[in-house]
Amino acid sequence: IDVRDCVNAYYLLMINKSSSGHVYNVCGDVLRKMSFFTDQLIELSGLEIEKTIDPDLYRPIDIQSQNGDSTKLQELTSWKPEIKIEQTLDDLLQYWINKISMNRNNTTVD
Image (tube, rainbow, N blue to C red; front, side, top):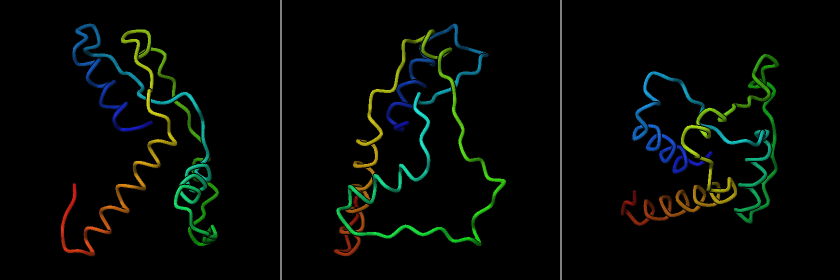
């Protein structure tokens, strides 16, 4: 999920007194593979990039997928993620493009 959605969930939990002492999952409701994220970033970049997996870094014991359930959080606060993951990835890519561009010009952006 987008960090902005996560912060919103934390805020809603902070202002809800009945949330104290409980555990809540802050997560989206769509399971995505890592390849989705790399494919999206490549598409958004407009560049021709070949993906390769370094076999020395691949470990069969690594978690292939993990999915959370935010039902408890949603029932208490009516929270749901609002920012689409595609927007998050576009914002992230634009941030780094701007940061690298500014660094080349010896200026900073945050």
